[in-house]
Length: 235
Image (cartoon, rainbow, N blue to C red):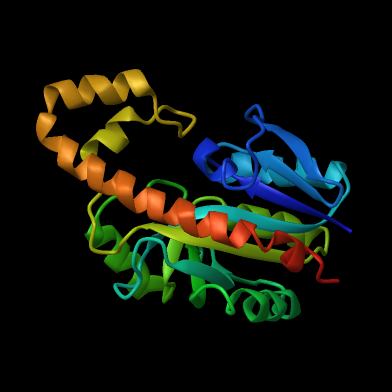
């Protein structure tokens, strides 16, 4: 049985494979595992999930980083979503048996946080936004892609999991340089980022801190990736 993985960022992709994948394309990293590099945002994630199904995927995983909404979560914490909450407050459940199996296999190696994963179609940049979203949804974390993948899985009646590592904590305001460097496709343009930093050098410490948090999240995903075969073997 083939499992498809949707990843939004090249840095997240690198935790699954050293191979390069063009944005909007997919690649088999094993006979039973195919990865799609979607780019950020729900529409890109939806298209990637649909692409994986054309490649024979019978289970879907949303893989990558998330922002914490619960103040107890720290950078690098692993979140396995029990349910997902879209922008209209609709609830989508992950596959309960697959989730239970994954929790049992990973808890021997990693500390797992379980709870709701909220959807945001735009970058949640401030601690105030995170606090409001936590109060509104009860979710412990938020990302931009998992709901879209879950809805594709639900449409095709396929099992779905969201495996996310925390990059920025609930108390953190993202550096303004991040929003300034985003293009219409949701990607960070290096030239815009550097130009903003040159004009606002006080942003540098925040960017360094965010980079360290993101590295902690990547390290967690790499640890999970060591047990991929155990995760995808669930039927």
